[in-house]
Length: 248
Image (cartoon, rainbow, N blue to C red; front, side, top):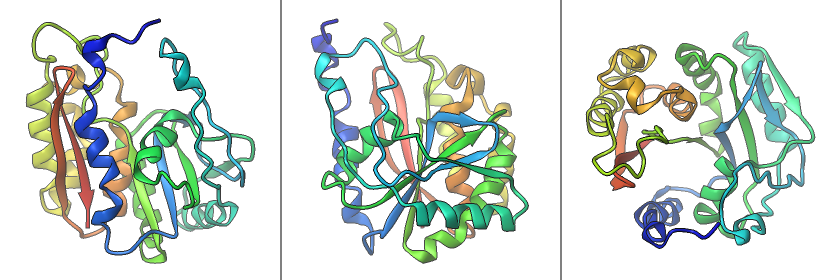
């Protein structure tokens, strides 16, 4: 399949944002915990492999995209700590000693940390994709932030693949993104209330026919504690308004 030329630079602004992300941090993280939209399990599951391979969980892309390398190490120690925190909060967890990094991990982190020298552990979503469950997971993992671990929700604020590349503005994109941004920057109580009830937002199911790309945000928001959220990225990509958020 030949990659359509009009799409070649569609993601340039997002790539620039990701490349500059670590320069905005006060200190370089000692490790990173990534919640990927592309991994769901019956219970919250962490990767424990020290040398994780890449999972090319996509199709129809140019041949070179299946030859990518990203050799960041895993961290069984961080995986163990994640499970300890979840257990302490009464949240069931599991580990996967074989799984590597799916494209929700290695694609953004090739840009964020191209040296691939910071250990990464991936954390699955929990089947059912319940917003409250994932906010609670984030709350349990909040102590990691004071232990030098960067918690990253890897998803997308808009994920309606049928509407991407439509002739008109992607349906529901602007209205849902506006609601989401207002919710993320609100005070903590209101933020969590609105995120729990995200399905009530205008054009919620248009923006997210299935919510796996939104739920990683819930974990990041839960881990934020009293820190307010900020919208740190916004652009129109393939007809849709796409945003990124940061806490603290």
